[in-house]
Image (cartoon, rainbow, N blue to C red; front, side, top):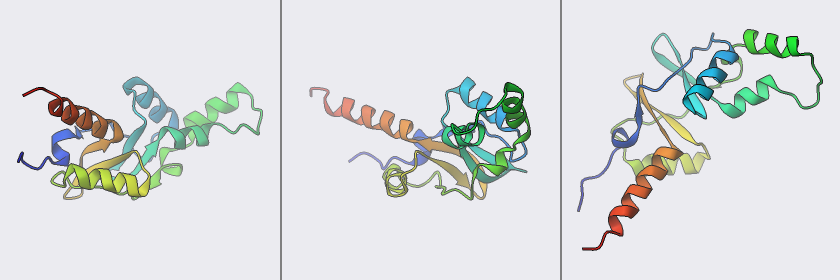
Length: 145
């Protein structure tokens, strides 16, 4: 039987992050540039939250209010990430099993988990990482012997 695979084996190490004091425009731009849907929020080296593309859309857009462009720009430049992030997100240790990560994400209906060791952010594991791992497993299974 193959060795148990760990979160550390498939996570994205040293993910791009923002601080709670960054403007939401900064988070939006970083997410667009990197193709991310979520980013850890770090303050002085410690994970303090997570921000998702959905959080940012909610903060920046209200379909019920018609605004001038200058107002949209004001919002993007003056609302801080800390005001719309999810504080104290669920986390997982890099030595946890991949199945534990998948189970935790499924149970809590979330798309990603910051990976933390000794209080420090070391990575992030997302549903994309889990799907890539599943594809890899299925490809090995279907190779003729």
